[in-house]
Image (cartoon, rainbow, N blue to C red):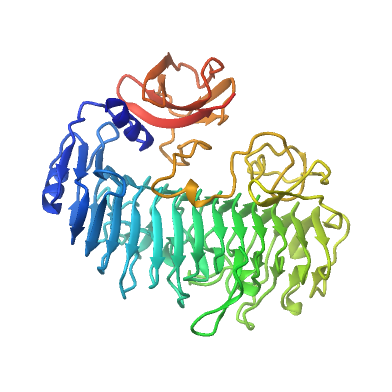
Length: 607
């Protein structure tokens, strides 16, 4: 039992002591809330298996990394909460909610975080039958409390390994909101920061609403200039049709990577904000036909739509999509505002200084579409767009289309070594009045792709062309598989390699409450409290540590059962560990000094 509890807590990303392992059991929400809110040394609070109606609880507890609070079902999926059941977590830290089935019929957000940090919502099932517009899981601030620290954004929360399903009314499955400061001459909005949404399964969100039914919304227009540093990764989206934006990004400095989209009407939309990274995602049309909404709108399976500045769109794979106009595999419409020149943050700010590189578009009805002006409502041209090293092949329509001929962007777009291979009735470029491609911009040659039946995607082969990468971007050092991308590499998302694949298209076995822990990446996230950089992962013989916090002077390595197998001093900034003698598998590393313990990270050894 001790080993089992150690595993649970380590995988929960918290550093802890094992002194409080006397778990308590409850079947009443008031008793549960009282016990949690009066706890002084963390603890495990178990809800006994069963079905509970109107199980409502508000938790307010500042736990610690050493002594977290874990509120969990007796077994994962063993507790069903019906009626108006919901949880509010307010002004709290280091709390985990785990293993519940929310099968509600109320008018409240199912789990709401207000002014919280280091909260984990894990391995739950969310479903809500209601006629109201409800945000199912919400991360925000404490709107009636501007005292420190609650006038600052919430931060470092995690929503992982959950199932969200069967949403048929407006509202989002997950909303990342934030806080505001009204102490100055005007209100300033800040998004919750450094939150992570990973390994969730989102499905059956529909039918199409006019607006506000995204599966995930990160930020909103009034806080779109703030930096969220949100990571959305390793999630699966299926039949998420409720909004033209499956995932809507409305803030700055977020990462959307290694997600899989299967048969969704809509796009991943960079709707507001700047400096976002979209990397290594899979988009499949899944033979979903063109649809029609109740209002008569045409519904398409789409890819990525882009507004704002300084985004990087790399290593994405798009196959079998039927979208056009708003929903093309890659959509660059014109805008109705320019960054820094409009105070109306709800505008469609033109795309500017955007890099679109090493993406694979194959067997789609359309390819890259440029210049749509929404019936002359958008009149701001694109600026400084780079489209490079993409692999585009199809058998119909055009691989690149200027949607409105008068809106050809000409030299506002730089094209570099894109492999464009039209087959059957397809063409390379249509609608252009200025743009024409030379051999250094669009190269018409056979990509020699092979279909990989093991993961059902088209991949490069040993015969695929190789181009020299002249882009100076550190983010283009790996391909969609997580394999090294050298300077001379294949165009498109996949660089041919015989190395093992770290990232593959996701299935329902990879996500949700009963999926195994993902061993492909470190659990560490980008954030202001990250103290150490660990690489490479997976490690083979050597593991390198770069510390940014000078007070750290030691570390421990634990195996998957929580047993300490190595303790060493860490006197220098850079440390290399010999791990060649350790067997392949999952390990944990903890950093500390004489006064406190810092972060715990997971890493993989693979010989």
